[in-house]
Image (cartoon, rainbow, N blue to C red; front, side):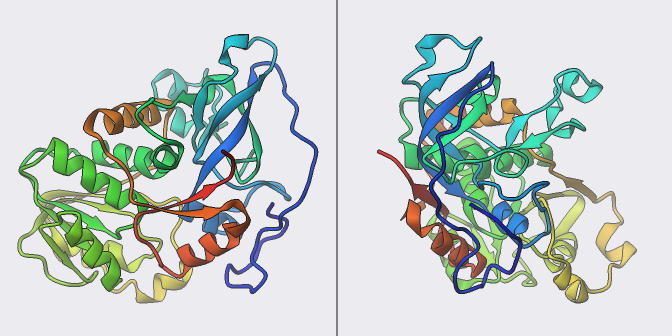
Length: 339
């Protein structure tokens, strides 16, 4: 449980393991016995105050896979025993213009799992039944967890990029989301070369292992101009670097909930003629919809897309977060909580 905000590097770690009463249900809710929960960079933003929870203490975690073991009023009893997932979107109002238009990710009453409501770094988690997602039988709990956020938000970013088969795709940063986007693109758009920009040499090697056509440092010059770039970094500097690599008419999609303000000093000069002219576009990704999550789960099952995942016991949540903060990343990180 997160009880106070602070630097992730503290020796004791930001989270404390506690015992508490099993959560009870309101009408329309289900309780999950949690099997796995993915570890996401957004949790670092919460802990360090860039995207602070509205209340403390709070249970983090928004890539939850588990079995329904209790249902509230208005939920059929045959839900018990189902394996389902819970993603970042915990709820939306359902009645505003954005919700009615299929853009519930932009709802002014959007609530996030593991931030606005307790999440999945726990043995049990509660969610609204109409905001949980059936897990395809082909996906085991470790494979499924990263698909609920890293995969789903990557899928949304890919759709917003407007990528067409044969265009050059750039990925800035190569963590959980980036490597899942690569796996999908290599199956769905086989004629598309993928260039990866990453500060970490280990991430660049990993990208080449998974089939990148080229991998270089953030500011390196790629073999050709890039048509679409998806940025998943926590920093500002890579945005300027990405703009300079875009082809005329290209699009940069920023897939990050926050950027670390300390990096602004390294942002560099943004030159209009060089970096934005020629109809280059910038689009940001805000949250996900339920449709994004369910579409990506189906795509992953159909295309046999599985994350490269490092697993940690529940008690090692602080270790997983610290390694994520230190950029010790090879694919996704997943806590294994229950059998």
